Image 1 (tube, rainbow, N blue to C red):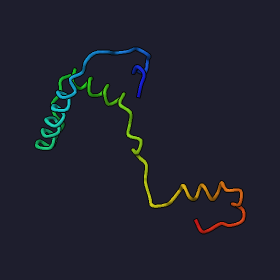
Image 2 (cartoon, rainbow, N blue to C red):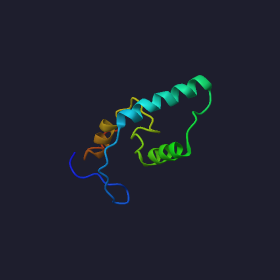
Image 3 (cartoon, rainbow, N blue to C red):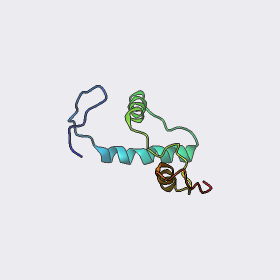
Length: 91
């Protein structure tokens, strides 16, 4: 993928991010919550940063989508066929 990433308001950022530190921090927070059955303690700055990050990260495309075994491509092809009016199997 090419191009320059921009934020939603059009500003660009070229700061290096220590993703390894973020990735290492998350399991410690999750482990604390699992062991203590309560939310991990966060500073106000951490809570704000996590909330902002969660807000701007795109949701997975499959979130809230139910998948079944129905072959929707074949159904669409049959329905869009010029001969669709001739034969309608049970769908």
